[in-house]
Length: 437
Image (cartoon, rainbow, N blue to C red):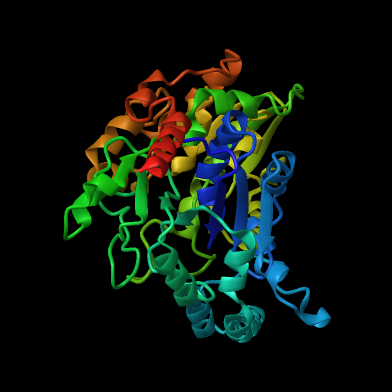
């Protein structure tokens, strides 16, 4: 069964993490099946709410004849409301941080409260205006790609799910990371009534994941260990060749996590994967001090987590004292051509530069150790990498050795024990075979 003239619709509900999985897959599909139709639908008034300031995704889609839609493309909206949706929801304080700041009498939170209130009003109107039947009828997909999200909430969710159930077209649940916290937790019930409808297929990126064990009934045949297309060598070679511009400057990529705002104390309701403000600033200070003792022109590129608040991040960087830095608004793939070294807090994002043969230093943090305790396969993967630090006191010497020896190439063959090198091919073959059934 050919994919030519089939129409795939990817529905994006929160951030770009599922696009990181599918873009390499779409690239491969377009090579093998030039006439496959692909569309992206962002469940937001403006795609800027999800893409933020980045241009890589939209440029890629345009150059590969992939359609992009957001909800504003399907509704008539008053002209005075066209500025809505310009900013990501991540660029404001969380409700938890707002509560903490109210207790500390911070006036600056009034702006966030006003924005949240305004968005709630507009979400109410959108719930009544958005016509998913008309949208789906216009796009007319044969196959759905959909986010795997816990407690996902979006405009018109019940209406869209009703269409899925009525049509029963193949719906593939897309991972939003190369692995999750443990072998089972990546599974999320499709809805309250049905854990995994028969028309759904669940893709597992990490070779040792077993999410089907979370189901109350045996549906293992609806799960597929897909691998992670972003780690395929042919895709990474394509990305590295997007920009061949190099200069004498050394670009260090610092991969970070979402962190609490300055002065906000942790409580039990905060996810342990959101780190404290000081757990971000301490490693940043260590990097700054080490760079200051190296006689080279060094620029630090900050790679945020999709949930980072850019305003908070910019303030923290201004306070850091680093001389040369920038915040990337692009996916990891866009940074590969210019990055010489990667330094990372606990993050699956670090695997992309590592697979791309960029020396990747993994800092020893409380969260990294927590990850190792939860899932031994992840411990084996991360601690087996060349520049995993069992002690952060080794950081400066490790960085200095890489720079002095101009060792800006480090092949991590060990990682292929966890991710094969043909994820896109496996997925395309799987889709083809399932369409025949």
